[in-house]
Image (tube, rainbow, N blue to C red):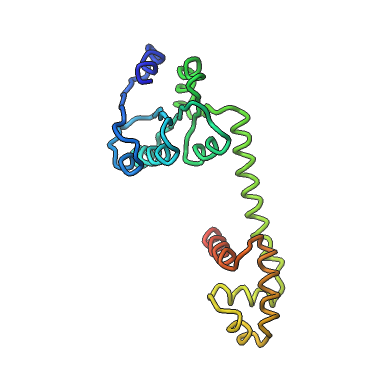
Length: 205
């Protein structure tokens, strides 16, 4: 692979610094000393955790770096995960022979080299996720006064009996309001509701 990349990039204007990894264990990759560069090509033949650990190391040592990941193939989930980790390019080994010499200059100038369909699906997933979070935030504005009181008590980690005593209502009524809150915020457990609310408050602040 290293020899192939050297051959493909001959005369490209890039100065190659080749580094063969001796270990593919995530802890070793996190401690690995990495040469400073603008562009990195990461061979993702190892496990996804190992690739993620290596990419995290690259970004810690070179925050402005741009990373191309090459692999035998990419599933939709793998592609989205790599893009979330900061990859700016994705190439299969089969594509690299024709596209690597064109992809790296594009990435060096600030662009992406990702299949259009993959990039579109990734953007859609981000938008849908943001929309879902916005719907949950909007749900907070639809709460009744009593639901807000119950939610505030939940955020203090009070039990149903304690909430009932504070608000002078029955435990059955508390359970009713808690059930409505879970439904409005789109979660199943009160622990998830509490976590979501704290995350939203941190986002707002």
